[in-house]
Length: 296
Image (cartoon, rainbow, N blue to C red):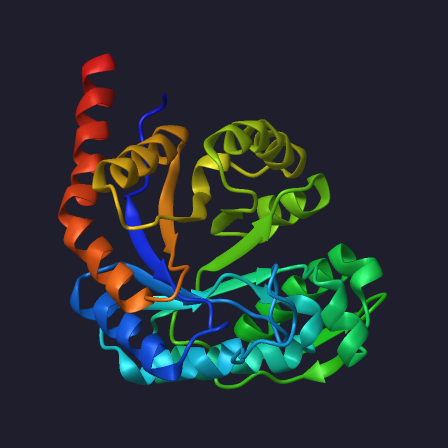
């Protein structure tokens, strides 16, 4: 493999679905106090998955504001914001507010959105042109974060002398994580992302998508080494060696931002077990760097 150029970082994710505020706060505290690099929620308005849409679920950006106040050092974000749920001006303003609340610790995750039932239930428009809308939103949001006035006359959004103040604390803006697995969205990753959040999961799928990612970067003239790779995956808490092996496999593939998804009925206990394993997980980075050096 190529020499890993980005540091290995670990995060926890408790979605905000089918859980409690107490559990969310407990996980955020563990992430903050146990020296995880980041902690995450997700962005849905109705529950997803086999249990149906009517289970309890909290709104993702409100939770991020709470994360900002509940933590002191850990970075945090949403894997990933559904672009079609909000006007880009509202999303840009929400993100700036959370960035200021946290003294510059926001990681900005965004994707094209996909959940048909939410669009049907709530009357959200745009799922049939979701990639085009995401492309325009990314251009608008970056402009609102960095320019004094934003003018944009697109197919989906129209802005005239739009003001976006204050600007983010992070310069030029919070890191942008884009969730993508198709050719069109990978082009957006290549153009706009600091981090590619790999949708799909297992190591074999990562290998398949890697070549598509390289092609997308080549098509827009972006150096692929500039973009970090992230992935989220589950662990049942039973076998630490299994976790270490899986994280090592992802690192060998170049995935340096690894987010462990807390599924099941005891997220606080599972987060605690992952925290206990964190020192061993950190060693994977050093071991890989030694192996790379020996092969150079």
